[in-house]
Image (cartoon, rainbow, N blue to C red):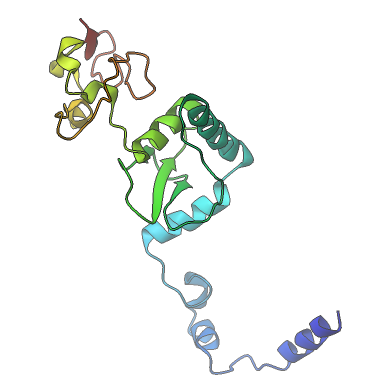
Length: 199
């Protein structure tokens, strides 16, 4: 308590124009437009800071539930705020997205508005762990038909078939119910048509 009184008294003795960048920026009227008075942020940095403040406990609990679901169904285990250089970092950006496979260091997964569903979160986490979409398997042509005429423009990449050289099915059968399998109308241009059909 004594130290805080001393610091408070010392702060009162600092002149408004103390020669620091803070006082210069304040005097020139730019301080209010900068982060922490003297930092220019990029748009992604601004979004990341806003995301830090918008992570609700509900959002966090859905992510935890998805991680528990993966742990229940696999041998994978997660440690929240664990040690190590490589880790998953959840952001509340626009959309639901993740990279495929380990990138090294901090690996962002976006769980944006509308993505707060256990299955969607699990889907994105499994991408980060290296899984591709089920409908991208090299053996998919004997299981499904893809009707490209009904696929929404610029989303055809969701149906790109992987070769046996770039994807390993681990000898497992095709799984229509996989959390990694899109629904039959996920990217359709006409809701009365299926872009994916089982054979």
